[in-house]
Length: 163
Image 1 (cartoon, rainbow, N blue to C red):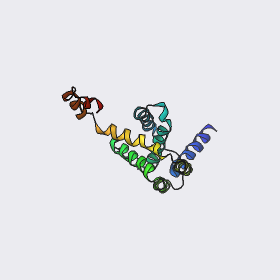
Image 2 (image 1 turned 90 degrees about the horizontal axis):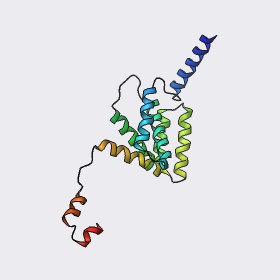
Image 3 (image 1 turned 90 degrees about the vertical axis):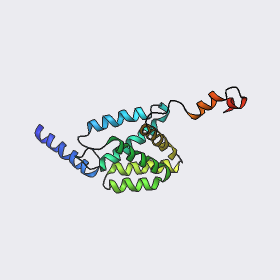
Image 4 (image 1 turned 180 degrees about the vertical axis):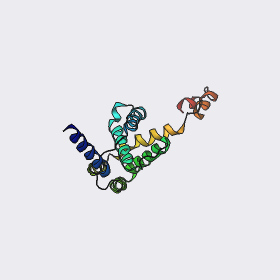
C-alpha cells in the first residue's frame, strides 16, 4: 500500500514538473536562491522585491534545460534581464513566462500578479533586483572615489563642502 502511494506521489510530482508547476531535484539550487535573495536584498522593507526575485528564479529554473551545469553569473544575468523587463515592459515579461511555461498554473498566477503590479504602477519593485545584481557582478568598489579626492584637495574652499 505504501509503495503504491509513493509511486502515485512520484508520478504526480513528475506530472507537475512536466507542466512547469514544480522543479524536482533542485533543493541545493533553491537553498542558494533563497540565501542569495536575502543577501542581495537584505532590508525588511524590500520583502516584495525579494519575493519577485524568487518568482523570477522559479520561472527561469522551471523552463531551464535540466541536467546541465549553469554558471551562477549567467543565471543572475538572466534574472536581472527578466527583472528589468518586468520594470520596463511588464506585458513582455508576462508573455515570456507564458511562452516558457504554457501549461503551468504557476505561470498564470505570476502573470496575474505582475499585471496587478503594472496596474498599480508598482513595477519599480523590480528595480532593487536589477541594481543589486548589477552591484553584485560589478566587483569591489574602488578605495577612493573622485568625490573623495575633490574633498581632500579643496577642503579649504566653502564650495567643496556643498559638493
